[in-house]
Image (cartoon, rainbow, N blue to C red; front, top):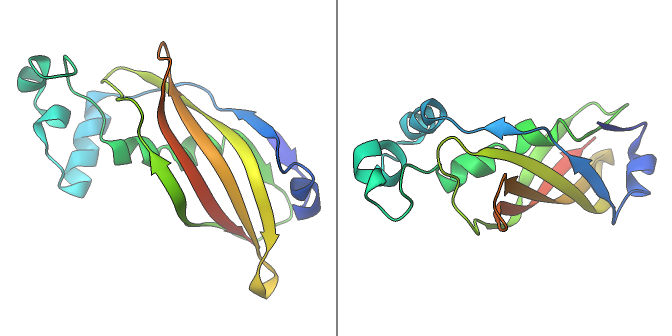
Length: 150
């Protein structure tokens, strides 16, 4: 865990890789719960029998489920002390280069791209988050996230 004492210290880290999270195993229960929360019951996610004969040989996590792991994994990598709030502002770009089969272990790495002063005393923090899957040459998700820290 990289701990920055303030925004100024975070600004000095722009252009660096901040580290990686621990591994997280994606379970069928997690996939099913995500399907229930979003209403996305596509068979490649929730029908193990049909998915076994499908293109991935079993069920896979939703792309947006993989993306939704960014906050949980990111909080393991770094934090900024002395701020009141840190909220998601959006995502500039997201790609899902490879699937995440059920039972996969994934982890995130974060590269700090920019820290820009915004109105109201806050700062926009842009980071490239890469979620990798253990044993895969391609990342599962690459997202350019934007947070507002004040």
